[in-house]
Length: 230
Image 1 (cartoon, rainbow, N blue to C red):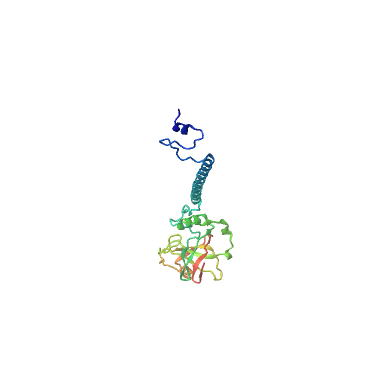
Image 2 (cartoon, rainbow, N blue to C red; image 1 turned 90 degrees about the vertical axis):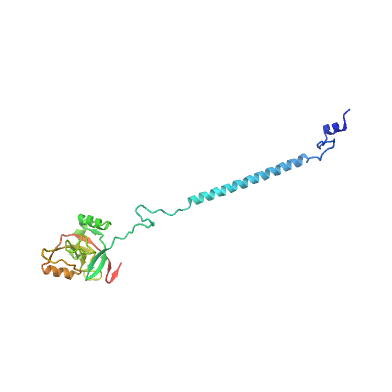
């Protein structure tokens, strides 16, 4: 005959778990409760996964934004190590006007050889413009450039004393377009530094030097002079 323990375990209505000694343990949750618990656990896992995915996306977007942020520009080829771009200003040149030192720039010239010479001397392009040779004389002013003589600290394009200008901005007859006058000391003369057009013409009158005008026009705007500057 079946024992009580056998009946308790095999009875189809038993909802507990057999314990040692034939006693029934506590009944588990009903099927509906188990379904609700499983659904709740699934939602928790889903929300946790969504949160983790959101964190990953935010982190990835932040990294992408940082990598695409504007970066400091790199120095262009030829720029200085500090990142500064080369200056657009032509180099200033030492010269004389009315016994005072001034500064000017070479920008264009009507002769190709002189353009090449000046470009090489200052490491800055001086443009060859043949049309300058057609400028009428009244639209120009002289410049005195020395082909020999003394070699002071500040020298002209041919390696001798600095150029001499007879006019400056504000003077009657001033023009940045200069007619080249080549100054050459004669043999037996005593070369010295001349700092004004009056000195140059006086030395010519004294027979110490010669002036030649090869018909070359140079654009030589003043940058700094006794009464002003650019």
